[in-house]
Amino acid sequence: MEMMKVFIYNMKKYRKKRRISQMKLAGMLETSTSYIGEIEINSRVPSLAMVEKIANALNIEPFRLFVDEKEEKDDSIQEAEDYLESLTTKERKDLTQRIVKRITSEVELILQPETDV
Image (cartoon, rainbow, N blue to C red):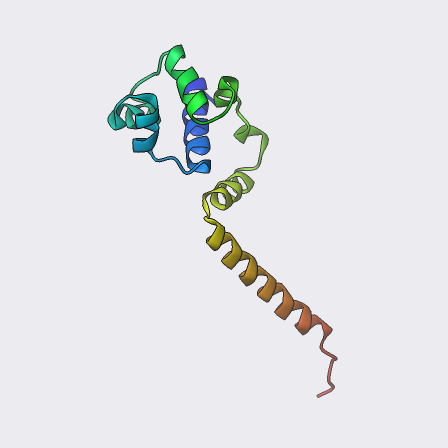
């Protein structure tokens, strides 16, 4: 994957993981929201100094913005992980309860004694 696309993907991933909006990130970096948006749609390229500021604001080491972890994983696994990372604590609890309920009902069906008809 092209280096800028990897950077953009990781910037969004870490920003969302930390629940930081573009507006909040812009404030942290003392820049405009539109500048952050332009970076994320690949119409602006940040300077190395800005890359370092972005990494600091996201509380990561700058090189992490350039590591292509996505290529190492199946796309469906990556999408699932991205979805789970985007959930709030309440949404995670709700999802966990629904999964447990579904598994429980499936196990009960399997354990039911067979009846002759």
